[in-house]
Image (cartoon, rainbow, N blue to C red; front, side):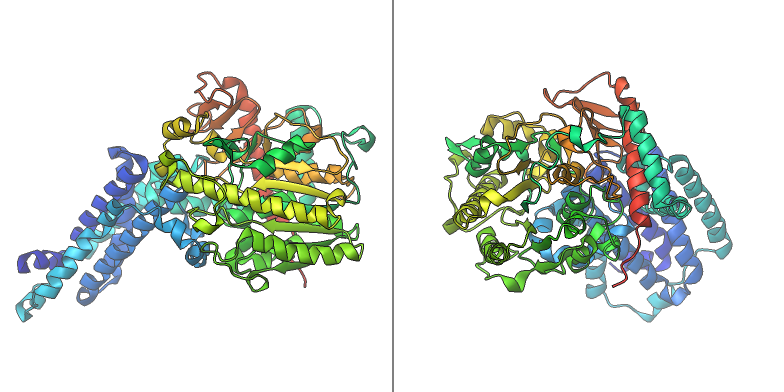
Amino acid sequence: MNSILNIFRKSPFWTTFILVMIKMVLFRQFNFQGVQVDRLLSDVASVLVLLCVFELITTSRWKSLVFNSVNIILSLLLFSCTVYFTFFGSIPTYTALHGLDQVGGVKESIGSAINLKFFLFFLDIVIIALLYIFTLRTREDKAKSKSVAKPIYVGIALVVAIGASFLYIRNDLDISNELVQAERLGVLNYQVATAINEAKENKAIREGSTEKTKETLAQLEEGFSGEVGVVDTEKQNFFGAAKGKNVIVVQLESFQDMMVGLKVGGQEVTPVLNGLIKENSFYFPNMFQQIGQGNTSDAEFISNTGLYPVGHTAMSKGFGDREIPSMPRLLAKQNYVSNTFHINDVTFWDRQNLYPALGFDKYYERPSFVNDNFNGFGASDEEMYRVGMEKLTELHKQNQPFYAQFIATSSHHPFWMKQKFMSIDIPKELSGTQLGHYVGATNYADKALGIFIENLKKNGMWEDTVLVVYGDHHGLQIKENDAAWVEKVLGINYHDQISRFNVPFLIHAPGVEGKTYEGVAGQIDMMPTLANLLGISLKDEGYTVFGKDLLNTTKNVVGMRYYSPTGTFFNDDIMFVPGKGFEDGTAIDLKTMEPVADFSKYRADYDYVLELMKLSDGYVKLLPKRTE
């Protein structure tokens, strides 16, 4: 054991290099299902840069401690990135550090993403620690623990490694697909490439303006679809059909559209939503999530603004200090009061900044509700709606029009809930599975919504209220829900991308005969669609949105990032996921869920989405900061 420790003491540089490279191989195997030698060379270059720097700046006395610390830190990094990839499907960048303070709030969800094999990243550290514990270090050992590395050789290695990393980064810098870029560059060089691209984008944005963005957007839309949009409001379908009505928006947590209309064991999973769709609602069955790092809070941002979330940070954290054009601000001009309800602490995802940024007048958080310990978040949806009903009834009695947003959380991952809340019998083949828990949780969320609707009717508010219901993002995790198995046990077509990213969206407007729109839609389209029903012209109000009014759209393409690489888009025919670029991408038919071999005719959609998201990012970053 002494001899093993002596190796580490005499050559901490090389032993650390070898150990870290073994972990880089593990990282690629866990996340990219294989190791390409030419790609591993990028890892070699980046690791050498890091270790050479520490070798040059550290004295002999501290080298062993420093290199052991580097090994530990890199092990934690690779472990964290692997867990992150397992849960989110993307390799995190340094910007994800902004969300570290949120981990405690979703610890059950994060814990489910940890696989025992991931702890191999720490195996060598445990072994070395045990050797130190059971081995006494002698004076002779100390005398022999000097580093054998020569500064001149280390300096040459550093220059060569920096040059190699530079070449790798330069060659792959323009790849829009983050996963492909991360695989080609490796986790360390990928961080550098991200920083360079962000700096370039921010420089270009600083040289622009919101007015210039509006002009460019108008040109892009006209070139893509032949029209900027229906300008004459008298010719717009349903314009002002719900003018002056109260608005209630319900965001359902982790809710996939496949649950709507589904029967399990002969029982309807979502009888309330099914009834709303039949009861003259506008229903958009081909709507897809578009959230970024902020997940649920990003969905709140998108639905209220018609803007894309940026790819590198949660909108609540990156832009909570801005004054963002939004639905609450639009309706404030119509004398509406805007409230939002969420049973968690308002500090979760910095909502204490997000809500003022969006112009909400008041928010209700954890202290406003009685904790019935439904799940890890606290109070149940029923409790949230109960408090909401009290507050909205007070406004109704004062003839005060309102815009109310409810963030339902009872169907949050990991979906397990107490038996006393269950309203559906889970079939034996689903018992104890994540899918079984998911069925129970979504059924409860639907039931709680139904109780809320009944109370709206009892209080005479239903006929004076527009109800918007949508899902924030997917729920089922791939590793626990094989697509073929889900198809078999539920008796439906299920695709691990299309079906997973497909979320419900419906609008019920009193006195308005709705219909089902089969065209593709995104969360970014919600705000302009609702504005049309309320008789608000976004053009007249000077608002810039990057979504479309779905009631007046003939051609739509929606982009997605974060849970799928930038450049991913949905149109009426396919879901497209890029490779290094468009040509090596993949396309899946939305109806058959089968691969599409020839997707060349959709190149314009790909270019359009990339430019659209770029413009949206620029517009958001140019928004002014709040003065209050």
